[in-house]
Length: 218
Ligand SMILES: NC(=O)c1ccc[n+]([C@@H]2O[C@H](COP(=O)([O-])OP(=O)(O)OC[C@H]3O[C@@H](n4cnc5c(N)ncnc54)[C@H](OP(=O)(O)O)[C@@H]3O)[C@@H](O)[C@H]2O)c1
Image 1 (tube, rainbow, N blue to C red):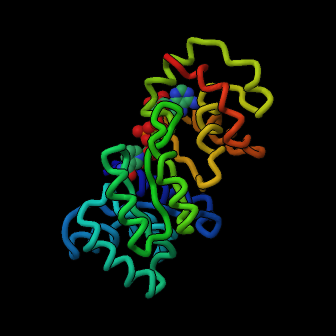
Image 2 (cartoon, rainbow, N blue to C red):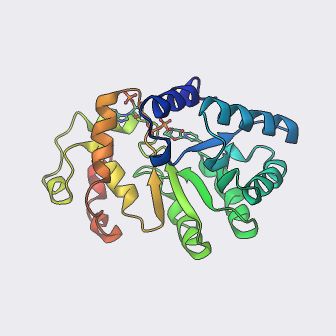
């Protein structure tokens, strides 16, 4: 589903001899036990590994079937962690139910300055259940960022170590104590470096944003 991503990551890790330093996360996205197994075996082959740190069930497709396989694989040591993902508010109720009832280690969902529904229940529930959280679509797909780029950064951005609108949006997400990791998408190495810099320093407390959210209004 992500083109040549696994092959590219596998080749890069191999060429730089850095597999041991990497935490590999990928996803299964198909119907049926055998198809799921075939897809995950292929991921392992493309990544040149016999062990994947995190395997996620993408958009909850046929999740009951894959969860059974992943539970077996975790017991057998083929994966370390099991995850489930969605990318839209419509998927939050189903994710919530899975978080409440199933033995998952990670959950991935959308959250950004423009889409804050996860604050209602998912973030607190993850903390309560000890589930790690990966945030996707932290720029809401990027359109808001294009608008914000035409404006000056607020002066207070420097206080929290931000030099760009992208970093501000990422620090906002990282301010939530429940968030383990945020995965902005980009096709640009320059954007990737800029975004990665948002991972430095201690993120502000959630309260920091209380009277500052108006800067993101469009
Ligand atoms: N169901 C799921 O599991 C699911 C669904 C959707 C997404 N995801 C995951 O979430 C991740 C993010 O999704 P996404 O890429 O669709 O949305 P996103 O991270 O919210 O936004 C990406 C957009 O922001 C732009 N951008 C990134 N950094 C920038 C910067 N520093 N300055 C200006 N523009 C910048 C990118 O353009 P450039 O290419 O020009 O940088 C791209 O158009 C993906 O890696 C994907 O794996 C998961």
